[in-house]
Image (cartoon, rainbow, N blue to C red):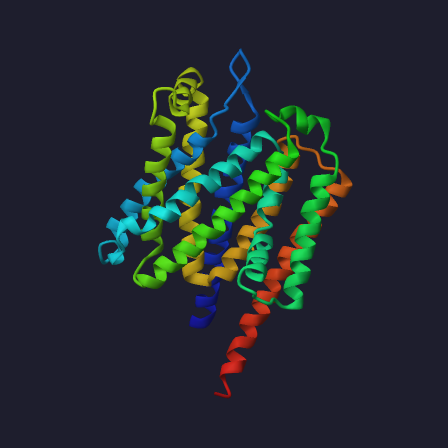
Length: 332
């Protein structure tokens, strides 16, 4: 009976994590797309200063992580000096800025799809730089993802979707997305080296350090000189208060989503988190197509399915490797 209750509780917690991650990041995607495509006020001006989203997100997550450390951590920041995050903070500032900037040039579904192909630069760097060899299933996954993204990029986008973009330019938009992935790869590698040097580093410590440096860099970039884009963004928000409210909700979704991700990883592992976030991206594309008026052709939907088939197979391959791992240790 106790095992049944424990299993039911575990299922309910997992469902809670799924709903939390989906709700936070799908709504954040809707807000991101609204801010990048909507015309505000009678004059019909666009909000061109999308980089301010990163600054606002940094500030909110910085405050949130500081509160969480004070409430839940048993030690002060796990002994991790904040200066160690300075280099990862640079790439973590530039990368997401490029990803958001891409929404001026390509649609939100295209951006989500391009950013889902993270395994491509990882495998390319591993093969070309480190001489690493991958299994046949991993190459199949990569080919499916690369082929799906390529087909989607080459297919003609609907005129309705193009009309909503600030500066339609597919090569530039996809280029920014792939640069975003490259910077993310460096950020992840640097974070791994920090946690290896300081094993007591918690997720909140990383969140605090990354957002502290991100706030500093973005403040310098946006307010470091008299004509910085930050001043124009503040002025735009004063003229159109709904923009400021959308930015606040965008940041709140990011902070709440991070909490659910940490909860998922701590209770169910990184593979479960990868599965939830991957399916969330697919749902985000569906929501964007249905609610935001970004119609996709049958061929484009085919390429979307192709990408997520590759991602799903990749998750399944990881799961199989995890299942086989204990069996290999038993004879020893």
